[in-house]
Image 1 (tube, rainbow, N blue to C red):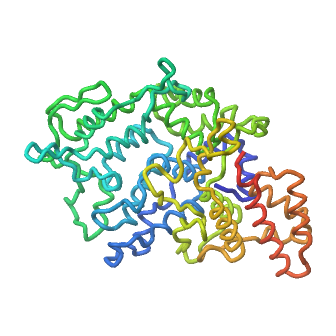
Image 2: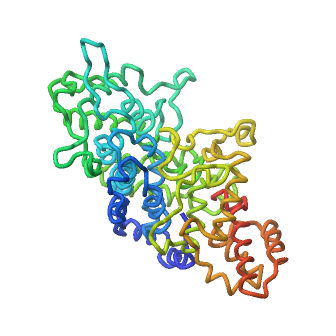
Image 3: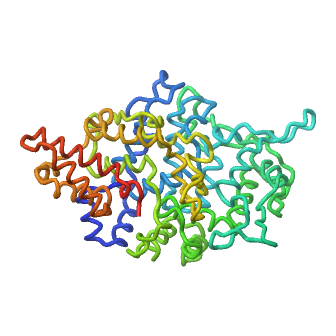
Amino acid sequence: MGATRAQIASVVALGYTGWVDAQIALPASTTRWDWLMAKGFNATANRNSENGFDAAVWRKLLASPDTLRQRVTLALSEILVAAIDGLIGGGWRAFSAAVYFDLIEANAFGNYRTLLGQLSTSAPMGQYLTFRGNTKYNAVTGALPDENYARELMQLFSIGLVQLNLDGTPKLVNGLAQDTYGLEDITGLARIFTGWDFDFSTSKADTPAFLRRPMIQIAARHETGSSRFLSTSIPAGLSGAESLNKALDVIFGHPNVAPFISKQLIQKLVTSNPTPAYVARVATVFRNDGTGVAGNLAAVVKALLFDSEARQPGTAALTSYGKLREPILRFSAWARAFNARSASDAWNIGNTSDPATRLGQSPGRSPTVFNFFRPGYVPPNSAIAKASLVAPEFQLTNESSVVGYVNFMQRVVTVGSGDVLPDYTALMPLANDARALLAEVNLVLAGGQIGAANLALLTAAVGGMLSGTDAARLNRIHAAVTLVLAAPEFLVQK
C-alpha cells in the first residue's frame, strides 16, 4: 500500500507483530457511504450516475490510517467481486458500490462465514449477480430461478472448481482432478436464492438508503420445497432466511474453503506462487484459529504475513517468489509514501481504468466477476510458463499498459492527480546529492531492493540534471521518483 518514513520507523519500533496488532486494533475511519452523504452526492441529480464513487474509494485507499485493513479490503474485493458497472436496478450506483466496499471493510478482520452471509443478502451483490428479484420455479412457463449467484458463490467465493487438498493442490483420482460440483448442484442451490429483494419498508428508491439495508424475503417468491446440493438436502418448509443460513453453513463447511481462500489471500498479499506447505499452514489457521473458530480473517492475515516463507530474507532471492504489483498498489505506494492529500477533500482522481493513458486498473471497476486478473493466469510463451509458475497481475500487462503507466505516473509525480498533491518536502534537502536522493526513494518506495547496478544507472541519470535552484532540485526529485516507480525491483514485490 505504501508508507512514509515515519510509518516505516513505526514498524521498526513496534516490530512486525506489534505493528500488525496495532493496525487490527485501529478503529475504522469514515465510511465511503458517510463521505458520499457528507459531500451531498445523495442529491436527486446523482441518482442515475456514478458521481463520487471513485473519489470515495481512492480516498480510503490513499489516506485512511488503517493501512492493513485497506490492503485486506482491496484483496477481498478482488475475490468477492461486485463491480460498479454491474450494479444496475434501483439507481444510486455510487452508493451501492460504497455499501459493498464498506461491507467488505467491516469484515476484513472478521469472520469469513459472517462475510458470506452479509454478502448473500446485500443489495449490491443482489444487483451484480442478478438474484435480487429472483423467483421460484414457474410451473406454467417453465422458468427456473436465476443461477448466477449460486454458481459464482461456489466457483469464486468459496470452494472453486476442483477438490483440493489442504495445501491447495488438486485431489487426483487416477491422475485426474475431481469436480467440486455439477449442474445439478447449481440448480439446487439457486432455489435458496429466491424471494430476495430490496427493502423498501422505510424509504423508496428516491433516496439511496434502501441499498444500505439487507435485502428482505418476499415469501410468495421463495422456493419452499427442499433443495439439494453438494450431497446435502435443505429441508422443505423453511423460511428464506433459515434455508440461506443452512445452505451457507454447508458451503462454509466444505473442506475446499480454507485452502481455496487462503491461497488467494497469499497470492494477493505476499507471493503469486506460494509453496503447498505455506498454503497448508495458512489453511490450517483458516480452519481453526487456535480457539476452535473457523474463518477468522484476522488470524489468517497474521498467519500468512508471519509465515516463515513470507519472512525469511533468503526467500526473496528465489525466482519463484514475489508478485507483480498491480497498478492500484503502485499508485497507492507513491501516494502514501509522499503523503498525497486532497486539500479540498474532493479526491478528484477519477476512473483510472484506461491502460493507454492511466493505470489500466481502477478500484471497484473490475470488467467481470473474475476480477481484473485470474489467480491462475500464466503469460503465454514466457519464461514464467516454462517454469510452471503463475503470474496473475501480468494479465493486465501489455505494451500499451506499460507505456501508459509510466507516462501517467510521470505526470502524477510532477503535477499530482486531480486535486491530489504529494509532499516532497523531506526530499528537498537530499536533492543536491543524487546518491542520497535515490537511496531514500529506493527505501520508501521499493524497500531498498533496487540492485547496485540499476541504482547506479538511476543515480547517474539524476546526477546529470541541474541542481542549483529549488526548481531544479524539484525536477531531480520528480525524475528520481518516476525512475524508481518504473524500476523492475519496485514493480515486482518481494
